[in-house]
Length: 244
Image (cartoon, rainbow, N blue to C red; front, side, top):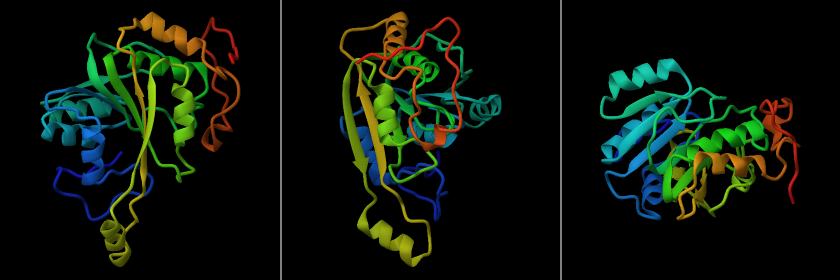
């Protein structure tokens, strides 16, 4: 994911293949509802360094969960105010005990990963177990991007877990779209945030895993076009099931 370096500044161009948020989008994302400074944030992605730097500048306590060791080393070297840890898919448990006010998923899952698969939901259950009661897990996506998972994929991926769902779509301002047109830059796209507010009652990691295993379409079907050519294997010792 690509973000601007500082809250009041944005780059001249942003890559078309990534989810990009403008300053106004970030403001709405972090204030509706309000996430006060010093809140603990977990940013999950293949290389969430830009996002971590932005959130540090906004006075948040940031932890980055990276999919590659190179990203962890680079993050620890360039952003000493944040904590960076390596996430190994398949481990299905966080490398530390912590409670976060927000889990922000940028590009945590591979593009060809089936979000309806049990293995993917078990990965997410580990992230939900790290949240404080009544906190949020938030996945960012763009509805018109056929190369990435859609908001509906994420909504049904999270549907097996208890909590309150909310979908927010953030649109770039009209002047920004016009500026992109006149300066021959990629037009900013609307970004959808699929949010799950977890229950006020604390749940254990085992309970979150139980919800993942009981989810609808677990181990059956694929979520969208990026995942149609791959069949994700189920975790060893699990049974494929479908619950109405």
